[in-house]
Length: 167
Image (cartoon, rainbow, N blue to C red; front, side, top):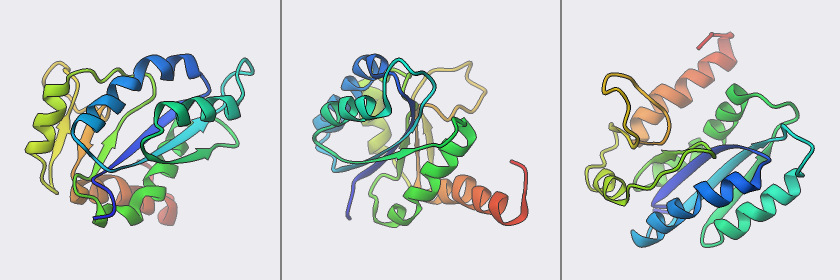
């Protein structure tokens, strides 16, 4: 296995948010001794901070991991997710735990739930890591098994590209 976990993060250029939201995730990953490929898509939504400064801050926070930084010409959440999905698809088969999907402004602090999700992992599973009303699907934050990620994310985005299929 090349990586234990692939982390996909949609982000915007606001390093102050990343400095608050991501260190707990980094700690959980390190506490579980996971080899990680972390991919960020950064949309520039403000002129207050440059994308370069945002990347520099993310590199400091995520220094233990192999990181890839993608940038958008025009900010668009849909395109950011699609770009991350396509960028990660060739790594899925070599990933032990599939994908952790995490938007940049969500705090993931429950280490027990994180560890439990790793223990219960299966290639066809989906584990929501945040509490919701109990009957709704949320992408964020969540573990996606390799097979379900391919079927529900990669295949649908490819169909969207090939046939103009609306998601």
